[in-house]
Image (cartoon, rainbow, N blue to C red):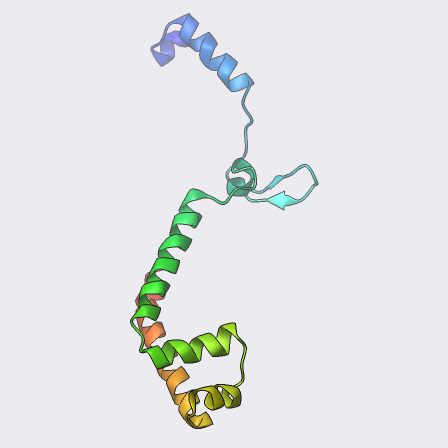
Length: 126
């Protein structure tokens, strides 16, 4: 076998020892963790840690969202913040900004439309 691989016998023995101490996981199906729960090969191999590519993609998405939010007008950012983070109703936001409820709805729709415009090319690519 060493001759067929083009290595000496000592190298082949070292490789065999390395393989014997390793864990083999099928990449075609799911593995089972210690609790008997099915996990993907990536989750199994990562010991529960987030895969690097997933983490990088999420960081890129967050950076893109941050840039898109900074591109909005102050009033648009304020409406989105009050609506989604502070969970205020349109009526309450209208009181805070001293505008009509319908104006709050227009501002929110405009901001969301701009954000969709930033992210729609990315969704089409994936």
